[in-house]
Image 1 (spheres, rainbow, N blue to C red):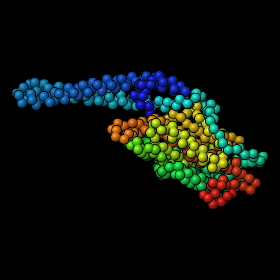
Image 2: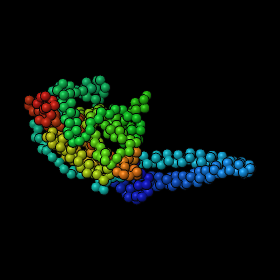
Image 3: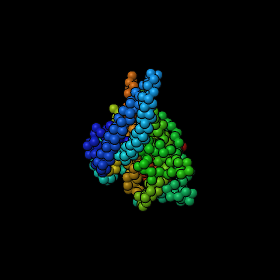
Image 4: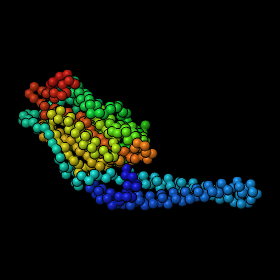
Length: 423
């Protein structure tokens, strides 16, 4: 959420920059400024009446003590009227503040100056790539057929138990999945991240804190009876650890990692591009989250991008790094880098990670602040997160790229975790 002072100070800049996200913010910006003007007027009137009432209250006792009963009663009646006026103004102030918040929740984060215009993923900029795309045999199988042949991945069974988008990992397939999780967590811990195991459901305040609500409400599974949401990513509960927290500048960087299952409705997703592991309703992911000093958040973003790149290099997967254009940038992000890996049997690039800097956007919602040493003034922190990594498409690419006549070769870096070198 953008801070109202930032909006007032940078009105035209915000409107222009949000056009890069294909978002026309002009009316919302003007409406929120108008409401803030109203808020200031109401607040000034309330303060004026409060000061008048305080002054009258102090003199009432003196009037009665000096025998000026009639004047004392008149002053008392005035304070009664002022109390009611103050109460009415307070209710009006709350209503106005609620209106301001409602509008602020509709305004996206302002994209970083490096973000270019564009409508969607076709306009993203490739900034780097690595690895070699393998040459596949004509009879190479896509991962959903290979998984069935090797009896390690069962989509029909998942469909029977739950429905489409909920696969069952079996035998060495389950062990490979667990190996990837452990590998990603161990690498994050080596990079200085503290592991946490958060809840898999969050309350409404947590959804609003990181910006999933109200923007992506329709994509989240909702537990009606308990008013809770299944998490779409560990970013939500992990970042909310610091909701309503005041940190010291000495605490930075705050670095957490978490493995969780993730749940997404993915409403409207269908067709050949979502076959197999390409798009699921439940999937495993290791997340990295940083809380940073505003002056160092882009340095931290570069560090997180380098960390994700190192994982793909160690898995020997062909990859490319994309800087998202304005039209593909999320509601909450100021700058995002997507990682894609090449799945050779499908002959397509699959997104496996998004690494983002939200600057102060989430922190404003979270009331996540910090103080410099020897300062009483609080400032808003910056938040960042990234997938390191999401497993389904990583597994899909590993299976398709590493298939041989003998079966599936396991990347060397995973063999200490799996206990076997092929399936």
